[in-house]
Image 1 (tube, rainbow, N blue to C red):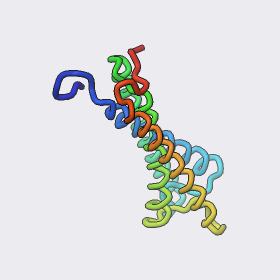
Image 2 (spheres, rainbow, N blue to C red):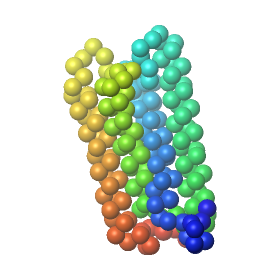
Image 3 (cartoon, one colour):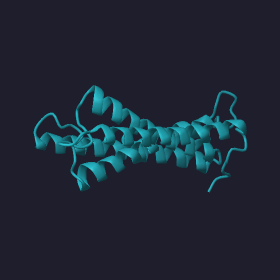
Length: 160
């Protein structure tokens, strides 16, 4: 996967390939803690509990696919010695934060397919949920900015 000049792929490829890993990890954290351990909600709560559990399984499948696909892509870059670590970490945090904010706004408020927790005032939960997502995005943007200032030496690996 070389760019048009036949040289090293752009550093942004490391960021792009790490995005699904961040999305998958944050989805897994959400599912394991809030769906399974605390049992506060399912991915889709507008139907029967059975449908909720099925949708949790679909979410779990999607998060695993995202993580595995991202890891294969990242390992491919690392094997060729063209993985830019800071760019990859930026992608990871942007993916994780992006998932968190998307879930908090789209799933919880726009589509209302589930809330973080039921039978309580959700305001504080929503604030904390989205604040965590915004913090993760801020970390990703900071790492991106740092990597952009020195794109060639931004944590590039030399292979395994």
